[in-house]
Image (cartoon, rainbow over the protein chains, first blue to last red):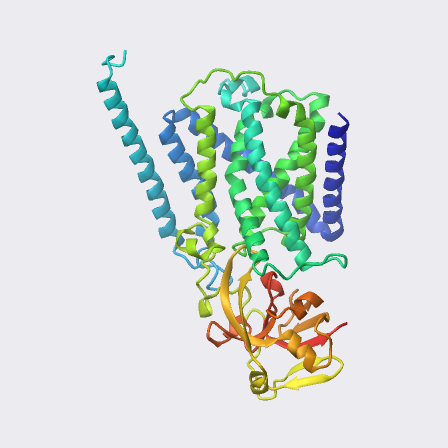
Length: 138
Length: 368
């Protein structure tokens, strides 16, 4: 219990140090906006991204299809800023790729891999069923 | 019309919302956060060294590795955070009591700070700043708040973390606990492989989710601040490079080229995570110190022709000035420095962030 209290107290101390850093460097306008952005980050996670994953995992029950869609989702999430800023980099060495092409290519590879695993499992599952005694799966 | 009842904690039936699952994912995310925090702290101390801290000049690629890890662990933390939030999502709908209210507050601090930190950190690697607060200071302060809130969270959860006896409820879908872990590990690996190439050039072609390609730029090296952004004027015949020390030295560019030249193979490693190795040629800083009668281990202020900006001047601590690899570089990868890489002269030193490898240098001042 003592260790827990010490750990918690250290945590509170470090957090307050961070808060003090914020208060000492940020202008009043920034201090006003920061909580809004912090709240926005929570809303984006708890009201948008996680519910999306929950809906997806309820609607799509096949785990290979679900995993494929999750991978498409997470890579797309990271690709969005790159796609939005394509061609708007501060200089030509920032965002030098064709991100639209690369993103489409990446998603195509993820989906193709998912489809290959899906077909492979189906094939081996059918074979194992055919070779076992309980034909018909009963 | 009657609206459906809002969900309660019991609405989520999957056994994968179990604390045992949350504990495992929490450990993974915790490791990513710790790596990200420590490497970030190292980068902060590199740029704002407290007097008591001695930063070594070797390994020469240390900063390249730590900052690459910083951006990599932050990127990989995105799927880990989402997975962790997914497992504990039903808790959001539990009725709060006075006791859990405090705990929830600490979690609110943790989740909001971590989610925003990952978001602004990722956008910073694109040099995109759509928020009304300064990136560097906010990113640093949020780091401390995250670690503090994480320690509080661990302190609160220790009984749950240590409790392993209770069996998991039966599965309701075909996704097992192992299957979930594999899916999450796969997502983290996928995101890592498609972005780490900005710091590890051999994987560059795979880095489709990275804002940089380490070989794209003048002389095969990316640029952060161009000569135009820095307001660099074309060089005139009256340009002189000066050293202010026990003796004053003044050189034309041709005279600089006549001084003994040395080679260094050193990476440029940016705070934004990208890095690339290069061959540099120029005069050792310690040779210049010797010429002006100062000891090799002197603190040196480096002054750029940049107009404004945080990095128009930088300081070389004594151990960096004395290091034989530290150069006033005139050439890069076999040809004269490109204007965007700091023509006519720039600093290149081992184990330093790119922002301190000052470009367009025209004066060195020996401080002590």
